[in-house]
Length: 228
Ligand SMILES: [Zn+2]
Image (cartoon, rainbow, N blue to C red; front, top):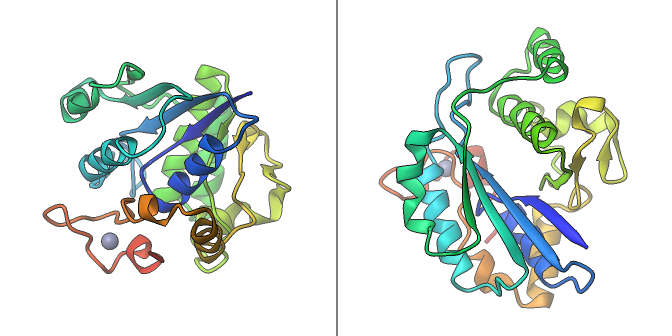
């Protein structure tokens, strides 16, 4: 079985990557990472500030993982971002996919502006509508590593929680999302990881959205939710 996953080098998606690497039923893994030049503020295209550290984190984690199942690792972003991740190309499975512009499909446009009308346009909405377009473009389903997180009323989880059934979101725009860890909190994942012996790998993960001099800021939502 093939498994596609969006990986950032963060705690949640690295936990999931460890699950599928250790799952005998899964024989091939395709990884996707978006350098994501849209973020935070509607139409202002503010880039993510954590891309550089995330790329370095993922390269570091790859060096301690069994990578034999990884068929491809696809980095999607602007051509100028290629320079930033060129140091990762020592792996034969690395691909760079150039996407200069965000071209929202009609489906995601409706979703985006509908959410905008509800004053929910923020970082998660920019990201998840963009991911929807990528999945439509490649015609794949993929693991989106959204954890159980009712604590933040502006989170993507809170926005779609009423539509979550099993590990799917019952909205057409998100029909290609698989949510394999949606019933787990970070504390649950940590408990499982302690039993499985994965904590050394998870300590290498990166969470902070706004690093300063390649160090975690300590105050953003992701830093506050860090459990390891
Ligand atoms: Zn932070």
